[in-house]
Image (cartoon, rainbow, N blue to C red; front, side, top):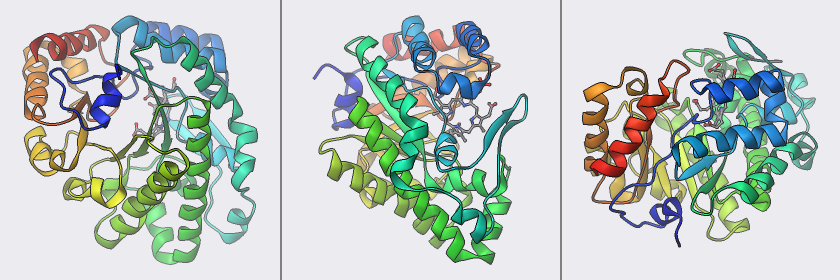
Length: 343
Ligand code: CP3
């Protein structure tokens, strides 16, 4: 097996960790902005297989990352279930809200998501043809809790207040939303794998706002069900989970879900994560994305620190969260050179 990401996911400790970056196709790259302008708005880019494949390939051509992440968005699943979705420039996503049983009853289920999402599978097929043979193709979806926070609020929120409120006031409805999203996520990721995705990653960006029993029921349990069902349908499929800002909740997440890799954000130190999370399996992370803006000696020092901290076990180098639009593309090159030459 020559693909280094697959080797790390199988539990191998490599002398140089494979590397890719969350949001690696994005607005910090002039070539992304050019293709995005050609497509029109962001959603038109997501649903245009030729152009979505093109922006996925851009960071691979420029930097030679070991992994390519499908270009799409976690909010395409609620859209495929029948939610309205649009993006307001400079502000972010907007959705028609789901806060009542009547609104929930209008949502579709199961197979119908493929009517909307089939262009995404087409993007995956193009990528499998066009990616260099050493590059691993990563499919993804949002985790049910994170996607639910957007569906319930109708937008991004700082503290996920509306979702927490619905959970407190109408738990059966809240749980029905989580269950519907769990089902749809399995079907969506399964279709990505059938189209050629070699690994799938589940993004639970707001897992950190769940605590105690809620964390277990709405972050860990859906991740376990999705991981187990995907592995039953696709034996040997590697799964990466990202319960962002889980803190202590990262401990034991591999065992509890059966995932092959747990991605960690930069609110925990790499030394702590090596001791408490990497002991259970492969980890991905966790350089602060702010270094891609500021660069310099601190970037080099902190990159080497992450590499060293995780050097005794399976590790995929990544940022702690997505790269931001104000990042300097040259700092990305410096990070990659430091990982590959300085390790
Ligand atoms: O990582 C990648 O390069 C793959 C593609 C990808 C995108 N979004 C493209 C995107 C992935 C994996 C996502 C995940 C995603 N989307 C998450 C979870 C991960 C995280 O970052 O926490 C969330 C919460 C979303 C929802 C979303 N999409 C928001 C809140 C926004 C607006 C924020 C912003 O930066 O404007 C998006 C838009 C979005 N998704 C962009 C990209 C490249 C920017 C859109 C543009 O070109 O204008």
